[in-house]
Length: 376
Image (cartoon, rainbow, N blue to C red; front, side, top):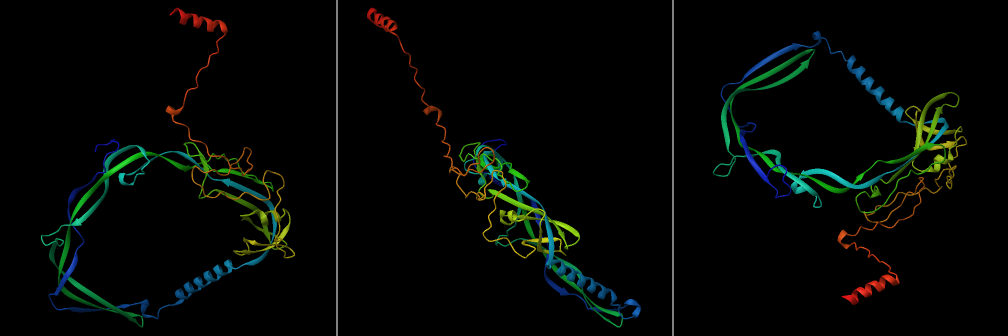
């Protein structure tokens, strides 16, 4: 199959690239002479006992690091002041569009079209050359070498090493391999798929959050949009804090709440107490209480201060097939929760009947037509 040919049967071809041998391995060894023993003595540290001070220093540093990590992970009580409320809402959508992709012909989707295929190298492989008996062929040779073993010990600042050298002849074999280049059919194609599009985002400061405008059509034609079924929406309710010890200002931190309860209960400019790690610089956000050690009431309901959000914020839409109806975001960013009907598929062109033309005739025109028929 030549380059640029559309369709066709899948091609799988292996072309020989040469003969090679694998890594050698020892199959037998024979001693060819007597072993010799060599003793060596080396003075360590000028013959004095080893100075263990560096070892103790290293152990001390490790111990201090462990103590530091334990102290940093421990929680401590801090006072904080809420300085600002922020929020961020996101709606993640997909668009049904045309994608240009490529893959090996055996893996392309069945609904792809405009396929342009060509043969290209997909990899390299090897297999051992078989003998008449069916075993892998080998090439072997003798290698003359010396096998050495060494044992060392240290006493009173002197290192004693004993080396045993033995002359040997080793039988080394290498497996013979046939290397081949593999060729398969690669296809570039077009396919209609759902693809992520730019996230709709709304954000601001204060207590009036609102959803961004994200038009959703929930139909199954090109250009249709839907909410991403795996990551539909996300909501961030954030409060900035100044951390202090009750008398002096310290570091700052931000709590990002997944729900508006704690976020709406906190008041800018008010002081609270909480737990913090990393020596009081990282707040444990679910530990916030007022100065009287009271957490938010269990029945607390957040009421937005204006905006077009509601105290009952919309839940993320459930997973739905392409053609099913779903939630809709109306113009202006307010979440309506209404469910539109699926868009109907357009009729084929040959089924679209033309509307007949109707012409109204007056009495004189009717008489002229009748007179013409009589004359004929």
